[in-house]
Length: 118
Image (cartoon, rainbow, N blue to C red; front, side):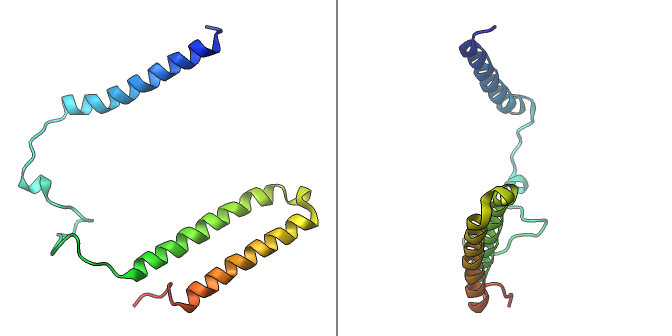
C-alpha cells in the first residue's frame, strides 16, 4: 500500500461507509412509534404557546450580531499575537488601526443601545 492514490481511495471508501453505517443502524435498530406527544414542539422544557412563527424582538438579533462580530474579530488577534515579534512596528500600527475600527463599531453598537435588555 505505498501508492498514495490507493491510500486516499481506501480512506474515502472507509469514510463513506462509516457515514452510511452511522446513519443506517439507528434507523434499523431504533423503535419507530411516533405519536402526538412525540411530535409536539419541545423548547427547554417549556410548553410552547402561540404561533411558532411569532415575531421576535430585534434586540436579540442585534445582541447576537455584536457578539459574533466581536468574537470573530478577536480570532483575528491570535495569529497576530503569534507573529508579534516578527511583525515589527508596521504590524503593530496595523493592529492598532484594526482595534480602533473594532472599538468604533463597538461604540456605535453601544450608542444605538444594541446591548441593553428591556
